[in-house]
Amino acid sequence: MIALVEGVIPDIDVNGDVAVVAITKHGVELARRMQQLFGNSDMYYMGKFARGDEEARGIQLFEGSVRLLFPALFPRYKGIVCIISLGAVVRMIAPLLKDKKEDPGIVVIDDKGEHVISVLSGHLGGANELTQEVAAAIGARAVVTTASDVQKTIAVDLFGRRFGWSWESADKLTPVSASVVNEERVAVVQESGEPDWWTREAPLPATIRVYGTIAEALADEPEAALVVTHRLLAQEEEAILRNGVLYRPKVIALGIGCNRGTSAEEIEAIIEETLAELRMSRKSVKAVCTIDLKQDEEGLLAVCERHGWPLHVYSAAELNEMPMDSPSDTVFRFTGAYGVSEPAVKRYTGASELALVKKKSGNVTISVGIVPFPSAKEAISR
Image 1 (spheres, one colour):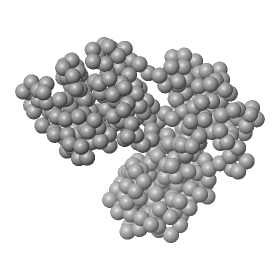
Image 2 (image 1 turned 90 degrees about the vertical axis):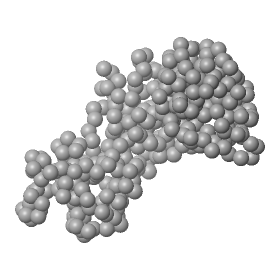
Image 3 (image 1 turned 90 degrees about the horizontal axis):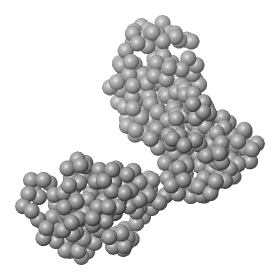
Image 4 (image 1 turned 60 degrees about the horizontal axis):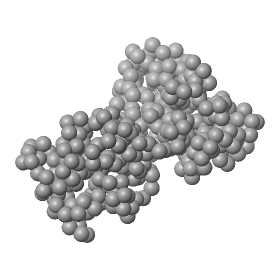
């Protein structure tokens, strides 16, 4: 039994991503039913409603004010489903709120299980999606009030998130979102990345137009913009961001060859230098590629771990299958492959042309490729 005491954050046992909290007789019945439907959830309800099977079912009982439970739940769950009145939940969570990038998704269900309401962090916290899932599972009505969802348009703060895109800064998310939902003229400029970001059944709103370049968009003088590119913008292009959000798609593949024992610092310095020369963003790096002989290279592994980049390795035979602009007999004598960085990137990306075929600097050889995608215009028009 969890004893809730003022000023003390209770010790809880976290196993799932979502917490379900109930404080009434009917709410407990609903929570117990939900446990059968949501395997990745933890249940909490008041001890006075104990049935005797809670320990076996992994249900955590508490006594005291439920308000004192939320400081423990907030930082440890992605979503919190409250079978509690909406007003009470708002008062209890108010002192805990930080911002939408950190707050968990909060969902409220009425005591009869008729309505499931998305309350907080609908997009970034996933409350809207969780609301839909819970409502479908218990046969309730989902209540979502986020303007982009209601109007079936682009959710600016979620744009490309399922592909791993990241935004450069968050300061324009709100004004650009306002432009989208208020049906102002909005440009989507996509130079790279996955094109199939529009998944709604309805057509893309007429107020949103897709462009292949920033120059094309600037010529039409849009009131807001969503810019998807791996490039560092030129000074004259930055005007598009006066009311725009810059997204970084994961499209850059780095081919790395290095001498045994090369330090992480040297490898990272070459990567940074090369990306700067190519005017490309490090945030758009998708993967690092090399020969399997380097899969235990400590410096290379350290760089990948530092940035969360997956390391893809290929055998010499796999690398030799790829066309190479500059095969090397010297590299072949040491590795069995006529090249490492160049064919590794070509193998990973499937691109016939690279942004950088090969550059050798010190103990490191680097090649750079961009994962090719069809244009967004083509994808949306299909």
